[in-house]
Every structure is written in C-alpha cells, then in structure tokens.
Amino acid sequence: MDLRPADLRTMTPEVFRVFGIQNALLTAGDRTGCNTMTIGWCQLGRLWGLNTCTVYVRPERYTYQFMEDHDYFTVSVLPLSHKQTTMQVCGTQSGRDLDKIKTCGLTLRYGAGEAPFFDEAEWVLVCKKLYAQDMTPECVKDERIFQSYTPAKGGWHRLYVGEVLEAYQK
Ligand SMILES: Cc1cc2nc3c(=O)[nH]c(=O)nc-3n(C[C@H](O)[C@H](O)[C@H](O)COP(=O)(O)O)c2cc1C
Image (cartoon, rainbow, N blue to C red; front, side, top):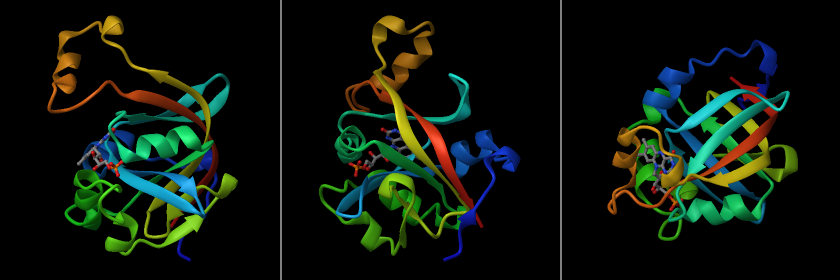
C-alpha cells in the first residue's frame, strides 16, 4: 500500500496542469462493483464553507449510473507515465464492454463510504456527494461552450459537487 492519508490543508495540487495534462480517474461504486473513467474536468475549492471537488459526467457514461446510485466518489490522479496506457483505455473504453480496472492492472483500495480508488495514484480525494445538477444550454453565456455539445460529443453533463472527506498522497 503506497498511498498514505494526507492533510488536505497542506496539499498543493497544480490543478490546471494536473487536470489539463495528466487527467484523473473518476471512480464510483463499492466493494460489490464499481466503474472508473478518465476525466479532464474537475474543480477543487471551497463551497458552502466546505472543502469541495466538482466533477462533470455525461449521461451516456456507464459511470453516470454509478454516480447516481452511490453517495461517494473518488478522484485518483495517476503518474504521467499512465497517460498512454491507463488513462487512454479508461477514457476511450466503456465499463459496459470491458473490465477496465482488471485490464489496466489497477489495485483497488477503499476509503470513506467504501468508495473505491487506486493505489497506483499519486494522490486521491474521497468525496461525498453534496449536490448534483444538469448543465443546460439555457445557462450558456459564451458560444464556445456549445463546441462541447455536438451530437458526436454527447449530452449535457451532470455536475456533482462532493465534500472532500479524505485525501491520500504518495
Ligand atoms: C482526457 C479525457 C478526459 C475526459 N473527461 C471527461 C469528463 O470530464 N467527463 C465525461 O463525462 N467524460 C470524459 N471523458 C470521456 C470518458 O472518459 C469516456 O467516454 C469513457 O470511455 C467513459 O467510460 P464509461 O462508459 O465506462 O463510464 C474524457 C476522456 C478523455 C480521454
């Protein structure tokens, strides 16, 4: 077990670099079943006086139902060396067709609420859902947003704000 509990107050993730380049794995489920997918959209910050992490999931994703059915989710940031392997597989294949966790040789661990995450990660956040909301075209203030919602790209994301309950770091 390489990951150790970390103090969120002293973690200083370079969020623009990490989520823009390394990306992360969003995982939801429990010990009986879970799914993971690559995400590039993620925010960390303070909301409602809490430490929060917000992720964005299109309804087409297999992960979507796991997010709906479970109260917890995790964000695992893997080393850049996983970019062409794990991150590629988990960002292009669906858990409907493939056991991505097994295929990528990822080691499951469980945090608060039995939320699954991966021991290969550089750092991990374990979150409890606080709020979920669908993004809608009516709320768009800049035309560039619509580039993300072509028929080929898919439906409008549901955003999930989670309270960060636990952090782990190498
Ligand atoms: C770099 C990268 C970032 C991605 N970011 C997101 C994201 O933030 N939200 C999302 O819904 N899909 C995102 N995707 C797409 C999903 O990872 C992809 O559709 C995945 O195969 C879904 O798997 P699932 O069907 O098992 O849930 C991203 C893909 C890549 C390659």
